[in-house]
Amino acid sequence: MKLTAKVHFDEKPLLDNLNNRFGLGSKAQKEWGMTVFDGSLPYTPEDTGDFIQRSRAATEKTAAQGGIVYAGPQAKYLWHGEVMESPTTGSAWAKKGETKVIRKPVQEIVFKNPQAGAKWVLRAAADNLPVWVQEFQDKINNGEV
Image (cartoon, rainbow, N blue to C red; front, side):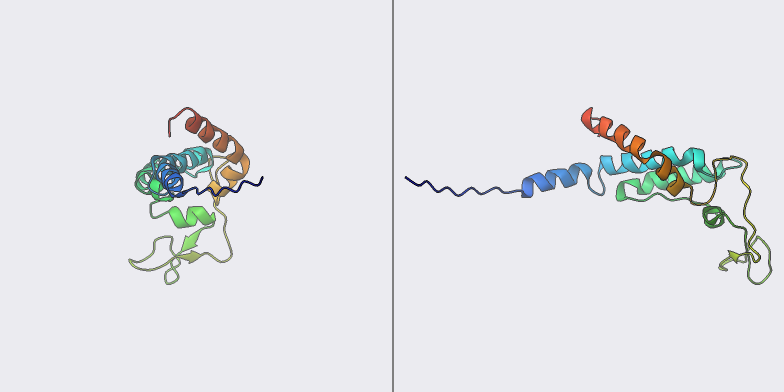
């Protein structure tokens, strides 16, 4: 005797649930963004605290949508780790609406914090991503996100 059965599984409710829980706009997405932001702090250039404060405020608004924002007039040159200047004046202060360019010859920025430097999030992730992932997985397992 031969028995044939057809099984239909509607995965849409499951996928919708996963997207609501972990997709863009979710609490989990915001938590992950802030985990990466906070985990990168030891690598983030800082002098007065203003850059990190501005960046945290901007990131808290965008993290749920998958964004980490480093905010402030110094963000671009800090990210590149090279002194930037006005192409018209050669000054570190650019005119309104003017885009700075990397100074030639290239002059690297020397940071007070020895871990700080250009592209700090990428370097922090290279050093710490497995730890961040495990901490985040623990939060998921504990029902925190």
